[in-house]
Amino acid sequence: MTILKGENMKVIKTTKEYFETEEEKVYFFEPLEKEISVEDMQKIVDANERLIKELKDGSNTISE
Image (cartoon, rainbow, N blue to C red; front, side, top):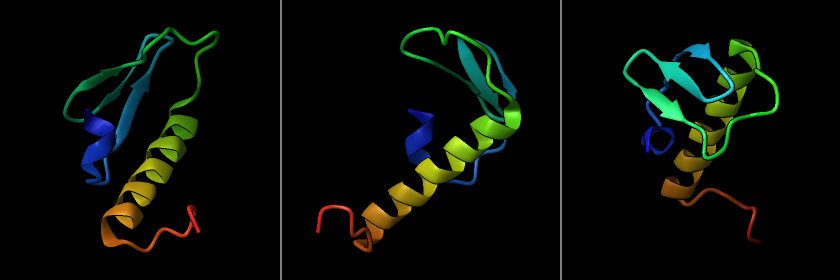
């Protein structure tokens, strides 16, 4: 799944069914009730990338 790559993905398009990066389309498990903006989806992707990086680096303190 693309979200787990953690490579500063740039979101270029969102729909109710998927979001698209410069490299591929990532489909949602279920369609969204309403379409979200590219900016909001980018914030979600960025937060996921930071979380993955923290987990890989062992610097995440969520479980403590």
